Image 1 (cartoon, rainbow, N blue to C red):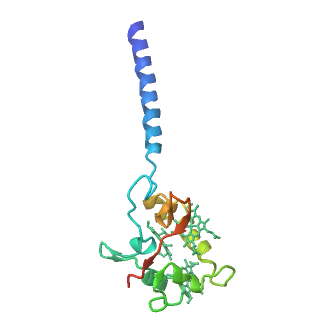
Image 2: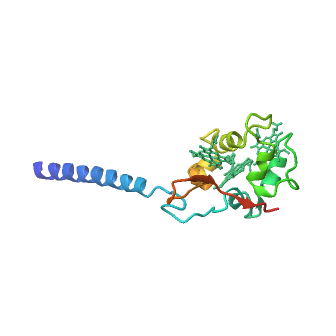
Image 3: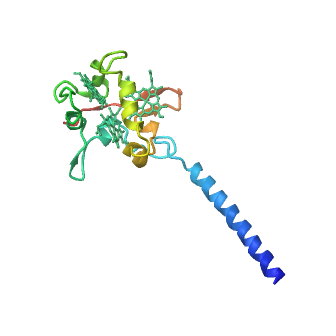
Length: 143
Ligand code: HEC
Ligand code: HEC
Ligand code: HEC
């Protein structure tokens, strides 16, 4: 009886230990697009904001839903660079950095960029491991 109690104790300790090891290795496999895993969105914005599964997530369509937003269908050709023609620092449209960061990280409990893409900086940014330089991915418009 005493024996089986200590056996249960040993098993319990082992289970706790294995649990800790497993959650540590889950952290080790952190997704860093282009660094620890292949990059599913090498062109940034337009690789997510596209037509997919019968839905239209393209940015020219999405921005039409934001009341007061100008139609970007004709004026924007390279994304996100051309968004910057209005989204300059201290402009009334708000800087591109602030607007894009806000929209992808606000309301973190509900934001699909966080729940579906782990809020990954490297979805939009790329890191050149040779130089250490960080930049913003870019692509031609998809409309
Ligand atoms: C990895 C996928 C991904 C990438 C890359 C991405 N987005 Fe998004 N974006 C999302 C998701 C998911 C949402 C919806 C967030 C929410 O739940 O409100 C979103 C929302 C938006 C919205 C609000 C309108 C809408 O469609 O809901 C804009 C505008 C936007 N993104 C612009 C951009 C721009 C500009 C870039 C590139 C600099 C970019 N996104 C890159 C996934 C992405
Ligand atoms: C012709 C000028 C212009 C261009 C080009 C433009 N924007 Fe805007 N954007 C605005 C203005 C003006 C506002 C403020 C709208 C308002 O709040 O009334 C705005 C607001 C936004 C917002 C904030 C919306 C909110 O819910 O507060 C986001 C995000 C945004 N723009 C993303 C983009 C992206 C991404 C692009 C490029 C694909 C883009 N914009 C191109 C003028 C522009
Ligand atoms: C959805 C796309 C997206 C995501 C995700 C994202 N960024 Fe950005 N980031 C941008 C864009 C677009 C700019 C503005 C580029 C420009 O102005 O040309 C920017 C600019 C920046 C800048 C330059 C700011 C300045 O004032 O010059 C820094 C620093 C930065 N991002 C850090 C981060 C970090 C850290 C994360 C993750 C927590 C992150 N970004 C996630 C799109 C994104």
